[in-house]
Length: 330
Image (cartoon, rainbow, N blue to C red; front, side, top):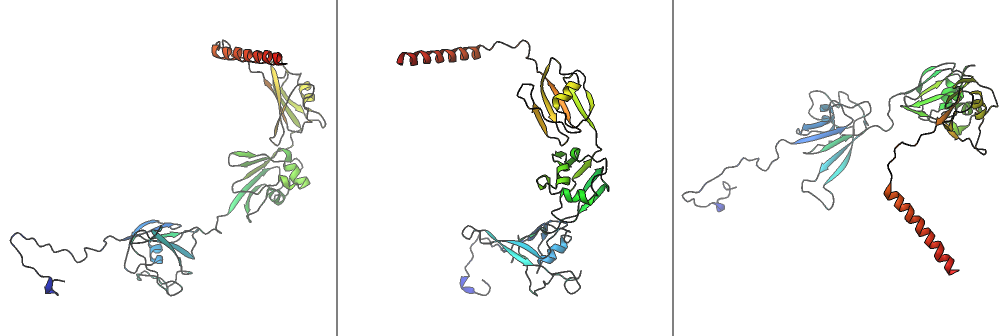
């Protein structure tokens, strides 16, 4: 400016210093952009001249299988800082339908979108490629044991059910024991009555399948296991119509240290059964487990609780005093 306009000129004095700055002193150097989400190499990249979203995607290795390839989300920082409560805004940029020689080649420095418009990136832009909400890899489930066609099955729809899988596998064999089916999801068992589901088509027992579910159908056991505090624990032949206490009698009755009974059905459901006159005594299913628990003995040498004793005595005294006061009133 000084060279073109002499009016701002001034005389120099001894000791004055003159600094000549670079012409780009006000320019930002090392400009960059970022890309995140469903691309092969997300991260920060140098900003090139006339760089577009597709240029950046190409530098980042391209899309993943799971990418939403129709649009990108570009977050752009306001260089002047906050505008009200906003410091940035997001633009949705439509992407080309496909790579071809008319859109991209290794010699090109920019990529033109299908609308014949350029969207040039700016310093600190963050490009996000989102996951396609309709994309997912194939899901598989396994059914093994006593079915006609055991093996791995691919889920063809989102809403595949357990009943549908069992029918696709041909149903149980003659020896298949649906009541004792073991349905595993991860490392947890899903408690379900597969017999009621298959033969009665009771949809209350139906369930949507997930990837890696495993269904195992055992053979019919024809036995009941009686264990715990009985005189002759072991497997006993299953007979229709017999109840829990019938099987305990077969096992020689309970020992002196017995407490209560845990009756586990082959589905995994467990009921607590007492010994009293009015206690329940359910009918037993094939493959059930009857476990008579042991009384937990009181710990020996339990220290005297002085504080607790004083508290109990005080409570009794207060109750007695209340009774006396009420008696005097009436």
